[in-house]
Amino acid sequence: MPIRKIRQKIRDIHRLNKIMRILGKHGFGFVIQRLNLENYAFGKGVIKNRFFRYFAETQEPRAVRLRKVLEELGPTFIKFGQILSVRPDLIPLDLCEELSKLQDRVPPFPYEDVKKQIKDSFGKLPEELFSSFDPVPFAAASLGQAHKARLHTGEKVVIKVQRPNLNKIITTDIDILNTLAQLADWYMQDIRILNPITIVDEFSKVITKEIDFTYEAHNMDKFRKNFKDNKTVHIPKVYWDYTRPMVMTTEEIHGIRLNEYLLQSHTTEEKKAIAVNGANAMLQQIFIDGFFHADPHPGNIFVLPNNVSAFIDFGIVGRLDEETRDAIITLLIAVSKKNIHGIIKALELLGAIDEENPIRDLKNDISEFLERYYDIPLKQIEVPAMLHQILDLMTRHKLKIPPQFHLLFKTFATIDGVARQLDPEFNSILHTKPFVEKLVLERYDPRRIYKDIEMYSSELIDILKYLPKDAFEILRKIKKGTLKIEFEHQGLSKFISEMDKSSNRISFSLVISALIIGSSLIIMADKGPLVYGFPALGILGFVFAGILGMGLAVGILKSGRL
Image 1 (cartoon, one colour):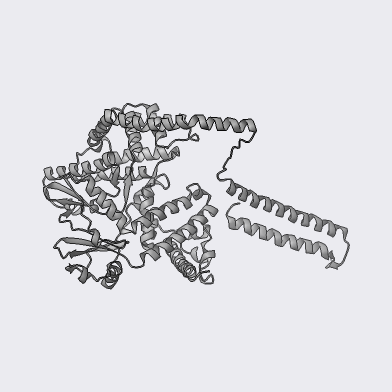
Image 2: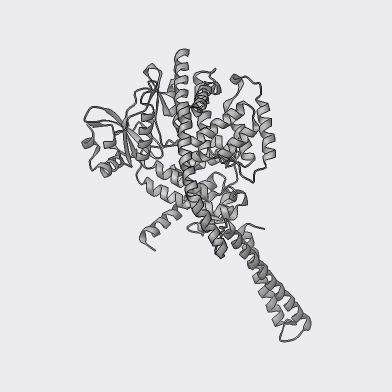
């Protein structure tokens, strides 16, 4: 095994031991037992299964304790929890709400490490690269920390520097999460249906992007381009000459962070203007651009002079392609008209419904949901509560909710909450209506229709062009008897493996039964050498059967499948 892989395995074992200690500390010893994690720990003489049984569950709710576990485990697990917090199809709503409180604030790292990161990225020290550089960070998070600086050209900037060895930490944690996902898939039937291995794989892709600061910088540039003509929104400029995967330099924002603004005294008109401008900006991102800031909480929004809203932190973004936005519009129109057939059609366009979903039950629940909000004034509708009910309905019917939808729902709920803090009378649904109406008009715009006809007609021509040739080829193969149809099975390999295990256990049980019956016949025959008055061969058969039986019982118990 290469030295690098050996070192990685050692780091994995050390980190796994720490994870188990933290799980036990917060009353999750039962998880260690169910996953048989003690078998993977280093130093089994010290870390034993019985050690974790003394960590009884505390009075705190499990959701709170799980949030504390993730915070204590550091950046990878904090990000994992934040992503899970927008997946109510995977975890209960109360746990989603608790994980959304995950604090991404940690102590800053030393200035010497900052100098090293900048030196490695640019070949120069901070004092050489910038005309001034504040060695004391003004903000620190799990992935990095931010320093104020000034370029030689005079611009004031913010330097985001990545934590040292972050890539190694995340690589180790991803290895361990993959191991935990595999163990959960083997030993925990209730978790297996969530497909934990796929969840970890998706998370790995997300966090790999986020630790490359150029990814966030490109996002920021795209938002800046989308809002270049908007006078009510400001997106910081990226200085690409001073940006690398581990260091990002952006324009310094001179304003008041919204969470501080909310605590200050401002006129009602000013607050209403901020609520409208911020909501308009987010609705443009969702319905017009199809590219939206997925974490618009008050800490990521600044208030500038003239009620201008400035957004920061573009590490997590959502994307909606044109087809998805069309399907959303179809859904909203159908909901407004109480057209259940139209709602089902829109859900099919979104890929949420397949043949396994019982449509009749779904239609009944949709009808009940629509009746609940029938004739209720828009200003009386609580958007977060309504979104929770929609998600609950979709989860209950096991609809395949696109991942971006979870980000969209969370973003919309956040917009509503922030806007209502500024203006208690603000109504998100009423405010969204003009954007939806604009998109509906665009759908029937002659230029849009012509564009669609042009696109689909070219595809139709291609089909008609190759159809005769393909049909002739199929008929020729049928006549010659050479037509082959290939089927690809999905999920059968795991079923075959399970059947192999079951048949082996049955065979093993039959062997044990045969040994017991044979030994009993030998003892009843009372032939051969005797031990304490019993045939030695019969006693030996019973002992051997007992050993085999104990081994089989232990194997079944360890698998967790009785």
